[in-house]
Length: 525
Image 1 (cartoon, rainbow, N blue to C red):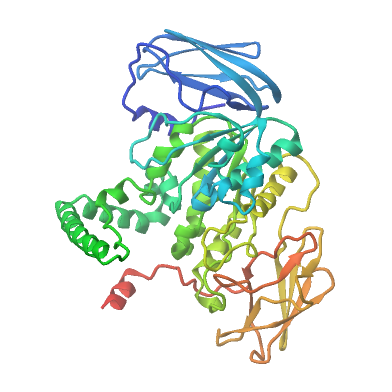
Image 2 (cartoon, one colour; image 1 turned 180 degrees about the vertical axis):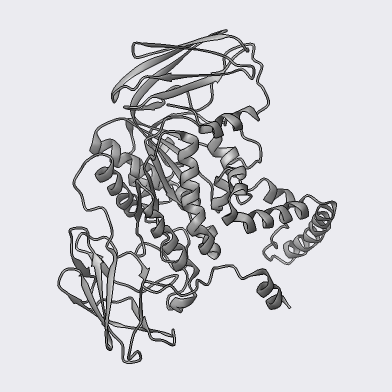
């Protein structure tokens, strides 16, 4: 495994660690799982110039601690092994890492719907009761936002149990348990999610700055940084805090809820939206630990910038693959659920545009998407049914990575034909066929004519994969949309129970596309 130049450059920016004894990162410790069938980096720090020897499964690897104290060896690939082993490390001192298993390691990342804990799931109590699995291992990375790459984090591998599983990612745990029990190998899961996080915070800042597509994002970032770091911002915050204290005291005296406290300018600077912050604080300390792949649930925080996300999301995946230097490892995500009031106009849905950006990202190799437009809640951005989310997500891995035969992919738009007042849509059902839920009519389609005004359409299923659409208000349709709303009313599934992927056949201007600066300035006036 070749360590990429990007990772080496970032590592060199860290303050040197001059050790009197051997030190290991948190992710290399008792109860860990090594990724099977690939070379696994093992690293740590010691006094510069110290020879370090690592032994594991009959192998002996050596390295010398560099000027910054860091050393790295790469273990040869070994097959899955559920028998606990010891990994020995000898340098200026010695350490034994015990109860090491070999199997499949998955990173569970994104924002709050990935971070949503097992105990919060509708069936979290019984899921936790079924979590005593000695060969399923869990580790959680705490939230740290910084512009400086972090060499380590506070955490430790734990054996799966009711106590360790309850506060772990529900989607991550259930996904990993399926892999463990179906594939029959040890599984290690890394819970590395941060609620409310923006995608740009998960990307190396220097790489964003190099790409012209993200110039506006980085210009806006520089402006906000200047404001938040100014003396005026600090003074305004102190004044706002004093006003809040007075208002809170009055509210308490009147037995009323306290008003929300003002946010410190430092909160954004060290938070989950500043470009590069999470990459440096949460992802970098796990590099280059060997993994099988990543599961991801994020998008809500970027929905208002869906146009940008269509470039940013695949760019992020490419950057992760670059710094991990494991090739195009599997990367599977959950599409945005249904949320907010039903009945919104289809042409003004930022969430629909974000879903489209997610779907387009499947153009990257070894990617996949779990569609969940039937699993959300209008009044809760955190739907509590995580079991079905994980089940749809794991189908991708079971088929694509473990060679099993399961239905795994939601139907997707294929072609559309217009004939007078009718539009006929053909979907790719990936070996299945269409099945409307609850009623025979296909619900969730809209049509528009040259006026670009959308109207609900009546849908009739023809054969296995076609839907005929008509609408009295649209005499000559030119475009079709399906499930194109924040919270779409739709009922079309494959016969395997996978919902049809939202789509549009038009290329009309996206509502989340940024206005030119001159136009934006004119509107501001």
